[in-house]
Length: 114
Length: 111
Image (cartoon, rainbow over all chains, first blue to last red):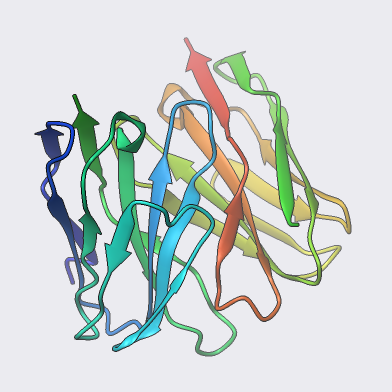
């Protein structure tokens, strides 16, 4: 299993541009999450999904959108990029079975908005 | 609101010098407390889950413990390869497994 994969690894955007961060997991997990990590700050939840077709906002959803059409994929869309969205983005997945709800993280996407 | 506070922010140890990292938390109904390790430029790597006060888990030189208000990550005789940022997170009951993270402890182990 590859686990959780994310693309791209690094991207530079100009202010106002849009992009989609890709996330795929091959563990057949129901739950998927998007976090952002800024220097000196804890990971903050942007959006999450408990299954295909079901998404919900996390702590910092403004400026982002998500969709979940399949179990495997959970793309994060940035519309009208702003410098405040410069961050490292992590996707994670988990499955609430057998009392084990551990989230497994991808390698991250580093985004710079100039 | 769930909160997680980790201390110290940074810790420098010599190889073999044991120490502990602290994670204090407030949560409305703890479902689980998680420890992750994060290397520079990488995603968090799962270490432990603790579910109830008094529980302990060990892995190599690491041992995690849990009380009703805090968790400790004890590092015994650390090696340079233990250098990383250690993250603590809590999961509240009925939250679709969402995690609230602390800001981490940056550990450096020198020869």
